[in-house]
Amino acid sequence: MRGIEYKGLERIEGPVVITKHSQNVGYNEVVAVYDRENKKRLGRVLDLSEKYTAVQIFGNSTGLSAEESRVEFLDKPMELRVGDGLLGRVFSGLGEPIDGYGDIFSSKCYDINGLPINPYARTYPRDFIQTGISSIDGMNTLIRGQKLPIFSGNGLPHNRLAAQIVRQAKILSFDDNGNIIDGESSQFVIVFCAMGIKNDVARFFLDDFEQSGVLSNVVVFLSLADSPSLERLVAPRCALTAAEYLAFEKNKHVLVVMTDMTNYCEALREVSSIMGEVPSRKGYPGYMYSDLASLYERAGKIKNSSGSITQIPVLTMPNDDISHPIPDLSGYITEGQIVLDRELSQRGIYPPVAGLPSLSRLMKDGIGKGMTREDHADVSSQLFAAYAKVKHVRNLVSIIGEEELSQSDRQYLKFGEKLEQIFLTQGERENRDIGRTLELGWKVLAELPREDLLRVREEYIEKYLP
Image 1 (cartoon, rainbow, N blue to C red):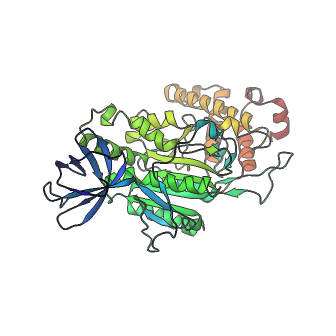
Image 2 (cartoon, rainbow, N blue to C red):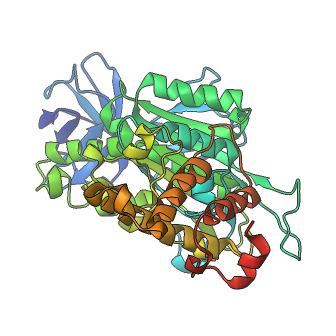
Image 3 (tube, helix red, strand yellow):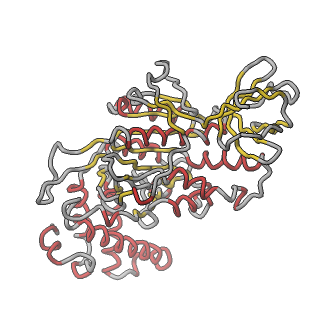
């Protein structure tokens, strides 16, 4: 029978409790655990066997005793209440309002684990998103419905970059001639999810949203560093559930920013260790790939809905190691990455987007005439090729010195400096449209010998080269 309380626990292992009762219990089902003082703790079914059920408690197990605790299976998955009052609200990592305005007045509750989308119902991402940041718009273009993570490191300005994207991101409209129609751009609604971040970082984002006037278009889910670590496993699922409601029920363009995915994976490793599972690389569970995919793959567009979900997960690479399991697996699942470079940051370049490791796999489908500008693909390709040559020349300088370089190599060194100082560098409040970005691209390409511009069509050189 459901709704009956069972007394007694088999054992308690940190935030995971084991009970003998496992009949008619479902995976991910919500569980209420009561201590001797009748204090209630919520959890969810983490694992099942023929005789035992493992329950993950959202909090700590202090005060629970194996003999006197009671367990109640609630016969439902964990749900998030959604409705018209969702925007402008702040929730905990468990989806509970923490802004003092009470619950949302709605009878709609969605399973936070999401509903499976038929792959046939998906539509291919194509629409260009203008972030106003040249290093992204020009060379690593973000497309509506894409999942494009930011790979960063401790101390790098990934939070400032994410906040700038939130402020500036918009979808442009074009006329039949491929010209941008002023005033016809579509702004995003934002779902912001914080996992294991400090209070000052959370305050930075909230203050930035408020000062820039976008707070009324933002839904915030906060699971801070002092919150139970296992809450971090639920927070992104609540955030993506809110995004799915806004995108596919309300037909809005939703931009989901999730930071920091490294903290999420650490919580996943913690649970795996408690369960005694065989670890994979660096102690992370072998199913981390599929677990991350269950989050990342909730981005996209579907037929018969004008809404979309675009994801920007932020993760800090341990020891700046891009081959670490977290960025490694994230890179396989997502459609590219924006990599922040510590050397560029130390030289005062903001945003310090690394030119060569960064890429957007969907870029080719969202640029060109009628989407950005006809010369966009050629300019981007030439900038990448020339910057790769700059890296080679700089390595050469470290061996033989600048005095021994040829005139051509000196020109590439000058091009590299100009690319970083003019094209990559811009202020936090500087919002460049795609026309300005491509104009700056041509300005730095002018430093190169004309015969070296092999990736740009002659007609574009004649038309755009200053």
